[in-house]
Amino acid sequence: MPHKPNLTVYISNLPALRRVAQGLGCTLTTGPRAGEGSVREMLEYISRGEIVCVFKDDMLRLADELRELADNLDRQDAAISLRALAAALRLAAEIKKD
Image 1 (cartoon, helix red, strand yellow):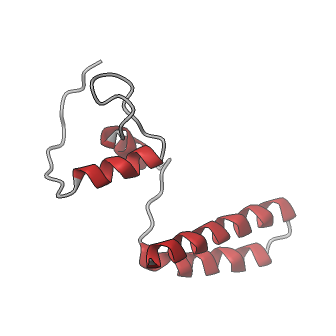
Image 2 (spheres, rainbow, N blue to C red):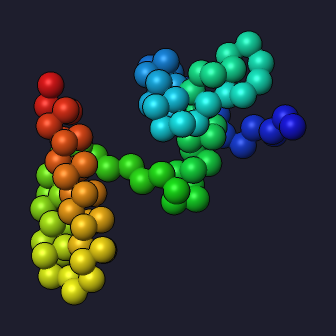
């Protein structure tokens, strides 16, 4: 079903944004660009809080905060999940350094 546009924006590197969307699993399913990243779908997920954006400069700080929070939890299942998320953020920050 076609959508009525409610946002007009100039994006200086649209191919890069489409690659990000595709990497997050947001893809077009029909049309000549089927399989490419869907910026609209990605923005919908962000607006619903289902995708969280983190500035790369904040990744290490947030990883440390998550690790500290995990160390103070009584529930080990939640602590394990938070440590895994902290490790993923730390790894992402390291990748961004390159």
